[in-house]
Image (cartoon, rainbow, N blue to C red; front, side, top):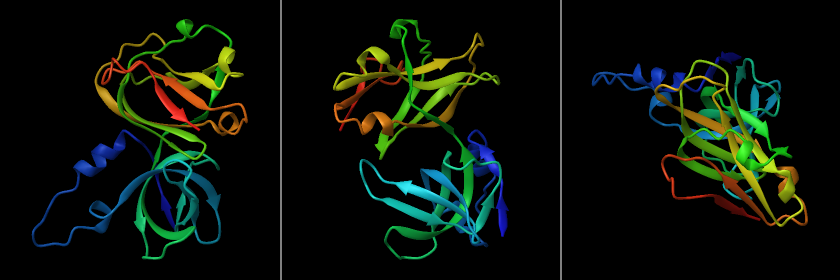
Length: 221
């Protein structure tokens, strides 16, 4: 069974930059026919690593069976997977060819008793924001520091009993100065909140450079 290195997201661009075109040779499908999805790593069986894909909204889960073994990934961790389908079958189970498995921020919704004004919310550049099942997924850019930072989705505890719950993207550089912008992917599990009977809307606040006039984004149940 092939072992696949678990790479940080910053290395994606570097790896793709190494690919060159040669008119006399076929280009490997790993560089031409693939898709990127944020998926959940479910562990390994006798065939290889198994992942779960969720489409937008409340789409049914699809189990993805690979023939590779992935190092340094914990069960139920969210990852950015580069792959394609091994055949044209459809259904809730698919065989896949895996070309890359990259680390992303994988966390659950937290709560804070303090005022949202006291939370560190350093700027990001939003690229996309979407829900798949019980997960809120984020693609943005952040300023590189080469040091650990805090990056969390936090609910205002004072709103948890309301039908609309205010959540904030906490981004703390911990005193470091940012330099160039780099891609960042994150996936936050919000299923416990989403499944509450009283819950109707998750209102997500973030300090965004790309759309500074947009105060928040609503995810309606």
